[in-house]
Image 1 (tube, rainbow, N blue to C red):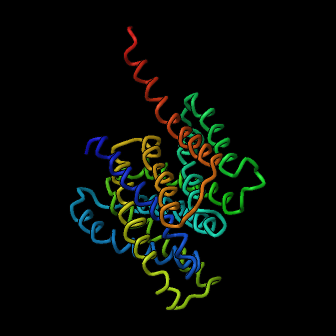
Image 2: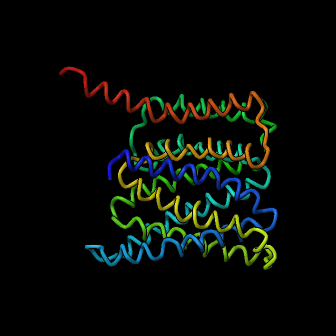
Image 3: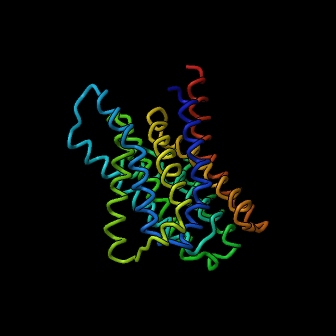
Length: 298
């Protein structure tokens, strides 16, 4: 697969996730956040299972326990991101959730520096400041306007960034993208079920009421989109993947306006533009400067 094809896979994931914000928001009119997470990732596990089986049969090397453990770490990061995002949607809009989740495009290179000890490009720091200013405008120009859901979604972006960084490490090295997908989905489903049974009620009426959203999130937002992410990240870098996946913010805003009748204020549009500009410069400027260095005469 070429890098262009991989990035198209990631862009496709972003579009699916953007619409998924609407499904995640409306589902909680009928079902609790944890049961929604449990059911969506249980379905996603079933979607990935046959692909993982075929991949395992064709694998040239046997699976190791260390590989499965690494995949489980990816699942823990995914679960933490899913929980904070889902609870955040209780008190924030689809538009805000989409853009604030997209902050992972700034967090990914920062976490890469912290955990992988790689020197950051200078554009990281102004990019982070731009993103923070965009959040300020998106909140209406007053930090007091940010809800608890907004803050949870920012935490969610950190976990998404961690998940993306781990996928970037383990997907290429293991050569098992489908198994990685299935394991991370299964971890989310099991953890969600354990916690949900302790603190959230569940009824068949609730499941029926949220069934369309559960199916969309399980089959498409979780199964298809995350599998496309894992496959795409085998052929591109985590920061490059982040910029294409961040298109989910734009799709979330679009679907929030079209399907839910949400309204974005003029200053909110400016904030959205600044956040997206921060995402762009974090990815584009390093690529441009790299090309110039490569073309410089010896």
